[in-house]
Length: 424
Ligand SMILES: *[C@@H]1O[C@H](CO)[C@@H](O)[C@H](O)[C@H]1NC(C)=O
Ligand SMILES: *[C@@H]1O[C@H](CO)[C@@H](O)[C@H](O)[C@H]1NC(C)=O
Ligand SMILES: *[C@@H]1O[C@H](CO)[C@@H](O)[C@H](O)[C@H]1NC(C)=O
Ligand SMILES: *[C@@H]1O[C@H](CO)[C@@H](O)[C@H](O)[C@H]1NC(C)=O
Figure (cartoon, helix red, strand yellow):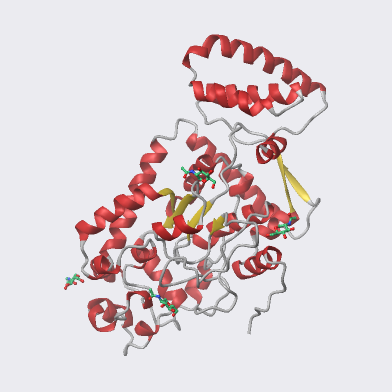
């Protein structure tokens, strides 16, 4: 019940003002009216939940506020805001698919609540303190056990998905979340970012075209060593033999497994919409899903080194890549369609809520980036989708914190230790 209370206090701060009392009065009237008129239509569990939720409160003011909120939200066709936020997250951080930006949301969420993260040992087989594994899911040897008396709440560092492993290390009410991105743009980004040696080392100035027309010559034998061979499908835990055989029918069966397991799969191309869906699913607040774009190449950077960067991609290469990474295209189309269906089903105010989110996000970005600040925080006004809240300079800092720095901070607090990892 404690975390429920904390959630309420955040949403319903005591405001000793006339406006507040007037609201309570109207709230009371509304509760009576609504409950009389609509009682027959309400789901019995919702009424029960409302009563369970208010039981713990001594203050009648809080009780009425909660009931008012519950009923007015139900009236507006939205999920009630009073359910507890979900805090157990299994995030599959797919390379180059908007995943650093999404990961920061989970790092921030967990950091602010002192939740326990699944972390790799600082010194590990992958030589990076933020990578659990590039070739398998969580195992007893690639993660550090939780501190005594704690259990894991969140995984959001690079590791492959696998149902059994996620079930083994995370609580049974964990929401599994992932991201996907249009495969050809993911491929281009991967080349630019990873500069895989098996492509870089091809002779001539048509390296990528050469590679895609002769993948059997150049692709590493071991799938785990490739960043270009259906890597999304691989990171979503698709068994290697399905990828090697390009077994479409077996892969479609695997997609049905993923469909069951994944609560939300965010689409890089519809990122804000995806986040609003996620927010609703996890019963989070607008503030929780604010983000700054991280690990994204700026467009001028993109053009600047075009002359010197050897892995330029021709639009004619696309069909070749499609044939090569055909499972990634199935995966992407599957979750794109699913997301579009979810948006269609999300109710008439979904588009408005997304617009509101975009506006607030820009406002926050502007505040965070302005060099001269009038104040240490900005206040975001109440809207039908959020209570009033402040964004502070500290929030800005967390939003812009890079993965390794953030991971180090979390590691030091979680295990009460001094980090030994440093940039060399
Ligand atoms: C994954 O890579 C690690 C480190 O190289 C290795 O110890 C492990 O055996 C590999 N696992 C699989 C399933 O290939
Ligand atoms: C989920 O885990 C909780 C806490 O460990 C336990 O009380 C509950 O029975 C479990 N539920 C299911 C469906 O396994
Ligand atoms: C398409 O991919 C398959 C399997 O990788 C390969 O055997 C075939 O030659 C490719 N076709 C073309 C036109 O590249
Ligand atoms: C956060 O959790 C760690 C254990 O993981 C504990 O040692 C520490 O005291 C907690 N900090 C706060 C502020 O609750």
